[in-house]
Length: 195
Image 1 (cartoon, one colour):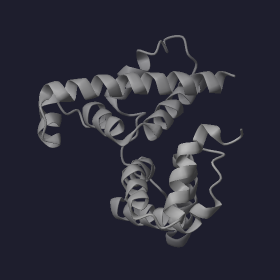
Image 2: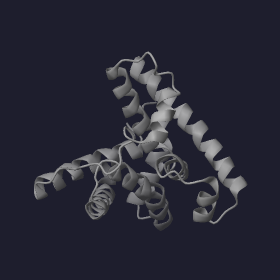
Image 3: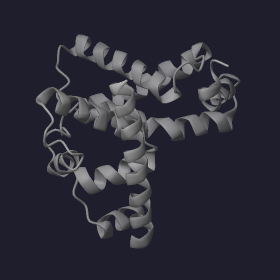
Image 4: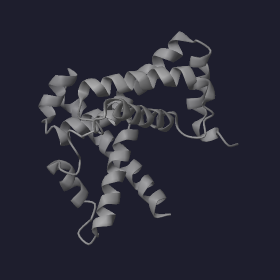
C-alpha cells in the first residue's frame, strides 16, 4: 500500500477538504508554528516570514485536495513554503538572510561535535549540519521549541519553565523526550543520507 506510511496525514487532509472545522483547527494548530519555524530558520525578516507562512497555509488549504500522502504532510507544506519564500524574494528583490544559523550557534556546535565529528571532513560536517536543521524542522512543535529555547536561546530550565508556565521537572522531562526524539530522527535521516 503506497500511502500507508502517511495515512493519518491523508485522513487529516481529507477531513479539512471536507470542511470539518475540528480537522481544520487540528491542521492549523499542528502545522502553523512548525512551518513558521521552518521559514524563520531561513529568513531574517520576521514580518516577511509571517506573510510567507500565512500565504503558505492559505495555498495549502486551497490545494489540500491534491495531497495524496506520498510524502509527510509537513514535507509537503515545507515545499509550498520554499516556493513562497522564492516568490517573496523575486517580488521584493531581497535575499532571505538567515538571522541565526545553527552553524554559528555554540550550543549546536557543541552538540555537533559530540556526534563524533573529530575526523569528519568539511563536506561531511556540512551534511550533518543540514541533517540537524532538517531534524529540528520535523520534530513536533513542543520538542523543537524547547530545544531551540535551551540550545539556541540559551535559556535555563527555570526560564523555560516560566515561559511555559509549568514546573522545572516537567521541562526536564520534556527536554529529555525532545533530545531522544531529536537523536532518533537525526540517526534515521543520517542512515537515509548514507544509503
